[in-house]
Every structure is written in C-alpha cells, then in structure tokens.
Image 1 (cartoon, rainbow, N blue to C red):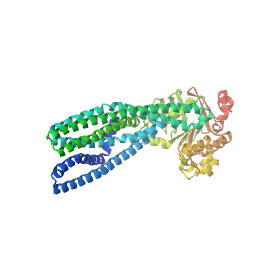
Image 2: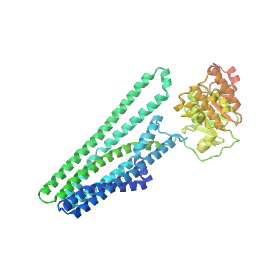
Image 3: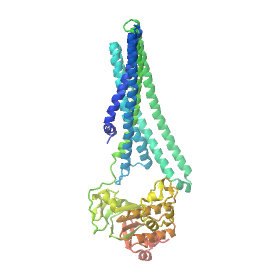
Image 4: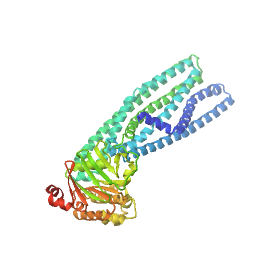
Length: 550
C-alpha cells in the first residue's frame, strides 16, 4: 500500500459524509462569493435609484444569503470533522492490530516510533479530508467569482481566470519541498519519542550504572535534531504563506486598478465597481485556502507514507490454516534446526514431560526461543507441534497450544488482579510462581509497566499469568533470574507441583529448576552435547558443574 492508496481509501471509506461536506461547504463559499455581487446589485438597483421596493427586496436577499452562508458552514464542517475523527480512530485501530499481530512485523521500528505513528501520523493522515473539502470549496468560490467577473466585464473575468491558476501553480511549486521537510520532521519526532520511551522504561537501570547523564545528553541531541527539522518545516510553511499572501495581494491590486480605470471611463457602473473590487478582495481568501490545503495535503502524504510502511510491512513469519494437533504425537519436536548460533539441533518433548535446557552460550537459548516462537522463517530443519509443521498451523491454533513466557514481563496500568485476568485459581498459581507474598495485594494499583514493582515481583506475576492460561505446552525462559535463592527454590517446587499433565520446557541455568526436571538437555556450540537428569550431569560433567553450580 502506498501513501496515495491509503489517502484515497480514507476518502472512499467516508464518501457519503465527504460528498455531503464538500457540497455544503461549496455552497458556503458560493454564497460568500455572492455577497459582493449582491452589494453591487443593492447599490445599482436601490441606492442609486432611491426606490424603496428594490431596497426591501435587497435587504431580504441579504438576510437569506447570510442565513444560508452561516448554516452551510456549520453543517459542512460538522460532516468533514466527523469523517476525520472516525478515520483517525480506524487508522489507529489498524496500526494497533498490525503491531499486535502474533506473526510479528518487519518494520524495524521501536515502540516509541510506533506510538508516534499510531497517534500523530494517524491524525495527520486523516486531515487529507480537510484538505480535499477545503480545496473543493475554494475552487467553487474561484469559479463563482470568475463567472461573476465575466458577466460584469469579459477582460476582467479572463484576467482572473488566467491569474488564479498561475497563482495556484506557483503555490504548488513548494509542495514537494514541504512534503520532504514535513516527513523529516515527523521521522525525527518519532525517533525522539522512541528514545524517550526507552529512557523512561530503563531509568532505574541507568541510575544504577550511573549513566543517566549520558542518556540525558543523548536525548538532548535527539531533541535538538527534532527542533531543527521542525524549524525547517515551519520555515517552508512560512515561505508558502508569504508567497501566497504576496501573490494574492498583487492579483487584488491589479484587478482593483483595472476596474477603477473602467469605472472612470464609464465602462462599468459604481455597483459593478464595488462588485469587482469585492470579488477581487474575496479571491484572496480561497487562494489562501488552497495554499493551506496544499500544506495539509503535504503533511498528510508524509504521515500516510509512515502509516503505509507499517501496514504494508510483511509479517516475520508466515502461517498456515491447519488446526490439526495430534495429542498422541510429541507436543514439540525440533528436528535438525539451524538458525543463528544453532547447528542441526534436535529436541523432542513427550506429552506431560518437563525438560530443562541448559545453553552454555545465551545466544543459543535466544535462537532456540526464536525458532519455537515461529519467528525464524529462514531456519533450516523443521519444528513440529503435535506432529504438524509449525508454519502449516493456524496462528490461533499455535497460540492455544504453545505459550512462550520470556523473563521480560509486560504489565499494564490497573491492579495486580486485572493483570492476571482471572479470579479462579489465583492463590494456587501465585503460590506455584513463588508469589504467595503478593496474594494479599491483588487489588494493589499498578503504575504503567508495573514500575512500582521490583523486577522479581514482575517476573513472578508474569509466570503466574502464564500458569493461569493452562497451555498444553509451556515454554519458560529464565523464570527466576530476578529472585533470591529462597524464592527460587519455592518457585521450582511450585512449578513441579503445578505441572501435572502439562508439557514444560524451561531454558535456564538455575540448579533449583533443573533439579525438578524429568531430564536436562545441554546445548553447546549450537548442538545437543549431553542429556540426563540434573544430579547425574552435575556429578559427572565439569562444564555442567561450572555453568550451574553456584
């Protein structure tokens, strides 16, 4: 999807309200253009003649004209604003859906940049409907003005008909530059937003290592770059406004001067002179509106490009449509997989089995998790879930079967209870996750991302949430890295008691957890080098002892 396609789709989705808005706003502009015409008629037919009846009719005509004018503006603007707000909402929903797609996305953007696109860019892209409606209404005003001038005097009308398109073309000449600078500005804003998001989430760590001053300097540089980009875009906007005002003024002066000369020579009446000067002065408004619409359109194009890049980004993984998962087959079978640091690694989990995986190189653990999560489309070998290849399974079927809980836990503003999403069985899983000390605080309010909790508390809550889901296959990655030894032992015992009927895969170096596993698989240099129970491996393998025993 290109930016043009996205903007055209936005207009099509609200074509009913857009047509109504454009028609009524065009009526508003037409009646505005008719005001100086009506005043000219008023002067020639009523003031110049001194007759009362034409005067009354002219007054009535002005009342009707202004009533239509004011109501047309309110009605048309309401239709367009409704369309803009609703399209902004739809775009934000689309971005959220794309970001939350379980297949992932290849945008390469950080969460702060995605946030900026979902908020600022969605709003600015929807403003294309304002640009279109205002541009169409301004064109209507120019057409009515030109026709009126032609009826008064053909050379004057032709002068306006020729001068206005040239004026509009001159304004449009700055649009490509404005689009580029607006795009650069929005990209800089998104990068600064992403950096701010990262710094806020990692503030504790930065303070712990004394790097907050370096982080502040980095943010300052990013903010200054954003300011420079904003000033460049603003200067281009100002230049376009200045050119529009200057050229409109020159056109007004030329038309007024020529019409004044015609009036002195008796070619046009005083009322027609008032009409011509009023229309020439009025023409500056729709021309300025066209310039503003051009700015809005340039801004919308830039934002639409960023939106389209996210919405059109291919998924990290491709999924099939099969929902067949054979319960008699191993829930997970990794057969000769090579990816990243992995080299022809094979691993099979039988139903109901708990398997610990010790990777001497943490990169092997990350690569294995990436493969199991289905986020490594370029890997060789195969990954089977219930006897069916992972890439052939429907994504919902995979998520119902396999739950992968990494040691980084995402928590949301609310309470502990609302983050666990359940009431039944809470005490049981909290105890199993080593979080019995938090049972009395389930209604405790949480700040965004659970910043009021310690790392160990967040980690244990994430584990409790995973246990509550009761997946057939639970994959854990270092579930005890942020807890002390006593809590780690409680967590290991709780998981052992809670695993009945569930297949569990735990990637860890914790002796407490590995000691509760049915078997332990040791991975070195990307391949399985040893397998057995924890006690035997700890007694016979020096490398295992060095990696596990503390």
